[in-house]
Length: 424
Length: 198
Image (cartoon, rainbow over all chains, first blue to last red; front, side, top):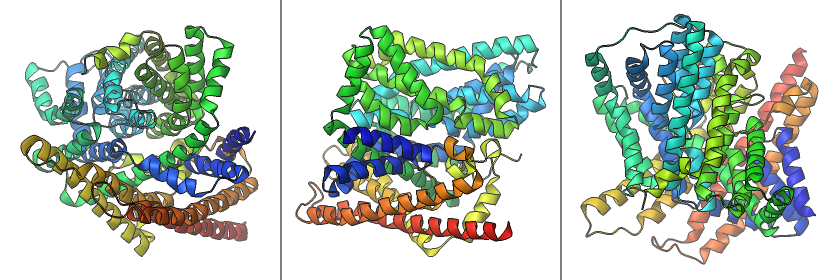
């Protein structure tokens, strides 16, 4: 009975506007008071939630991304993508998607991707005659590959919460992420042909090589992270700290865009952002402990399985639930609440936890480009100066692509599981 | 270009729920938000920033030591680096989370509250502030018992009493509580000002 109250109070508090982290804490508190459980468990479970070596990689990756961004990386990545793709019809939008995919290998969030690439490419696209809503839609949609292509903050969280290998989750996301990016390029190309978008000049091989050499240090970071984790040389946490070191050295001595005095500010900002996520993780651990002791995940699993035991229908139901929550809730918050609860359901129909991890994250990031709460949409719209309604319509073709890739990930295990199967 | 910011931490500002409330035109130029921050750059904030900076820098060095010794000096096995970095991480979070609280950077869902009238929304906001203060007051009080439990244990590899590690929860909740109270006070002050001019 009190378990139902836990859920009801949590949902009421969230829609009341209380931050998700505090809603988790407060609804847990109500439960503990009603069940007469000593409240010290609050401090204990928060502490236990943070006591993980893997979580340390979150501030690491955020900081590396911020440092790289300060160090002029974005500009170089865009130049490189444009040198290769710019001469095709709708070249700038293809370069936008390409840059998002490359940028995804540095940052672990979609929002960082939208903000930094959008700030540079949306004004440029508008100037060349692309529609504002199309420019914003391409930017917002393509940035959702950020948390799919490693490194990925949501996957670190998913792995930490459930004990799935974060390294394997990272690697599992690579193929679906690349697939997502390329399919968006195809859609974008056909739209551009239809609307007769401009194309840039074909660049000489020499120019392309030069832009590649210029961007190689940025691409090197992705290689360092991926190869390091794939071969088992680094744990994700070590990889994140090595990425920080790499970003500092490249920014200070190679690109020389980063100044020593910018580093403390970057550290403080990155930790501040991670700390807000960690308070969420701490309270979520308390909440999850209550859920587990009330056997809620098992109840939800039986509930869903009582609707149908047909794997195809169960997978569709899981997708629907995750997509729905993703439209109004922030990725990491939604993941913390839903992932441990839904994982047993997925496992019971024979799904691999790693495949489910990729599927869940993909579901939730799709919500970043849909109303009512689609942060990437808001940011891209803000830069391009387009209204939300118009932008939501422009996003639809890309949304269809994302859903198609989602179906592939959901029903074809090899898409996510092939690469991790190569790992030892 | 207006949006190409020199200081370059776009992620931070966007997550601030209060900025998100203005929906589509949320992209406030950095200079403005920097000015706003500078004005109330209080002594407490400076301490927290220094704590964050020192602990995370120490963490970076610890993890690097772990990697370097493993690859280049196999004869030396540092057993404490894993535990040390977990501890430093918690310290960094304890100092960093209050800073996030100060800027109200905790994610919330604001579709419902945005639909309310100004007056109802004010009431909701005040209740939210009160609930936040209450929550962290309780966490702070309970973390004290947790610290006492830690006095009897010592950490496995570093050997210091666990009460120090457990204390990170007290530090975090104490400073978050302070900013929760400050935020509530500011909101009410603002409300009074608005009420006066209307």
